[in-house]
Image 1 (cartoon, helix red, strand yellow):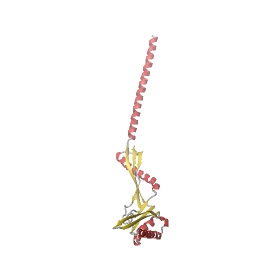
Image 2: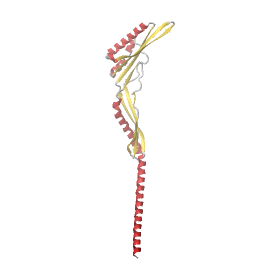
Image 3: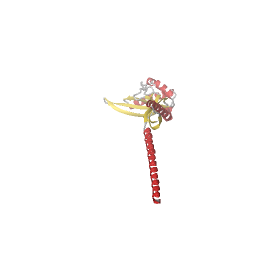
Image 4: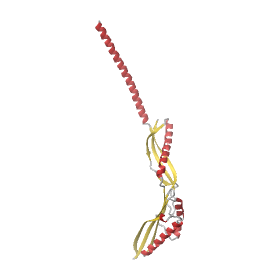
Length: 244
């Protein structure tokens, strides 16, 4: 009888252990399933994002002016052609001196001599190019405005002569412009999120577009004028935002 009672107690303990283990296993499966499902949900939510573009523009004024002056002289005598070129060069130098430019602001950038025969008579053509570089934009504009004074002094400007204005301080305005473009992109993302009933989270990824510098009002055109000092800097960024 004693052995039967002991065996029964042992069986009851074993059944209790099995029951408890089953309960713990069930609870573990439930918790694990919840965590797995919640993790999948969070993962799915993390995949929700929107890609938008942001624009930033800024009007600037060029800080460097470069005027290329091309002119030529032609004669049946090489020495005469050279004398004409020297006279034109002197006239150009005087023109810029009168406008207040330093002597070293105007520099030669190239010259060539070509020869051909016409009815047995040699023809010589000498072409020369001078370049003006200055950071005084107002003075450069004044020079362009008076360029026909050169024509009146006997200097015939060839095709390729023209003023070019450059903005060289792009690195100084890049960071704030990128920030402006990113802010503009977030506005677009917030509008999208509002329409879809979600909220905008952090940045998932972003790509900075290239900076472009163009004439603010388009090419000005006109004789001897190929550019304008008034520029528009533009950048477009592409940003991918998380949606919460």
